[in-house]
Length: 177
Image 1: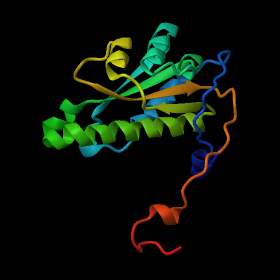
Image 2: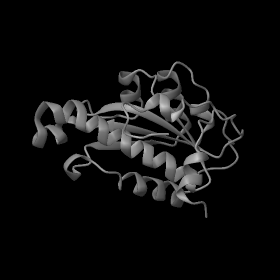
Image 3: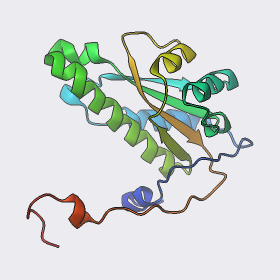
Image 4: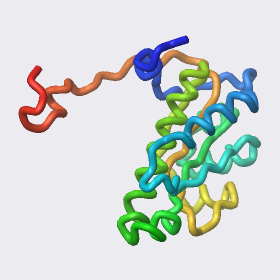
């Protein structure tokens, strides 16, 4: 079992998936359960998750994303949506605009890390047409799709991408390196 830091270090965006290895119901359930443990504003969990498993659904998401082929290679695509109305009921417009977005993206990040811990791979897709993605999975108009997460077994080992040094990211003198 990898420790948490190893799981983080092994998370990469994978753009080629093995079509011969499905994601099991148990794996998918575990990943979704972990996503639901993510912190959220007021513990409201102001997000919803749509699961695309059929070839037709994944093809429609591929079309919505400008033809990103790995969305049809991966056996599952998770669509994380904000539920602004849920957040607005307690926090007003800031809840609808910001807190629901934060809730959904944190849950999506947890799902990615859970997938890595389960031996699977993911890719976060932010470039897509929201209207087409909504139509692909009959997502209600009250929800806003904000991230597609391709999920499956990697057919490649991506090169590590360079990261900015911590000193270039930190503001002020809060941490002396």
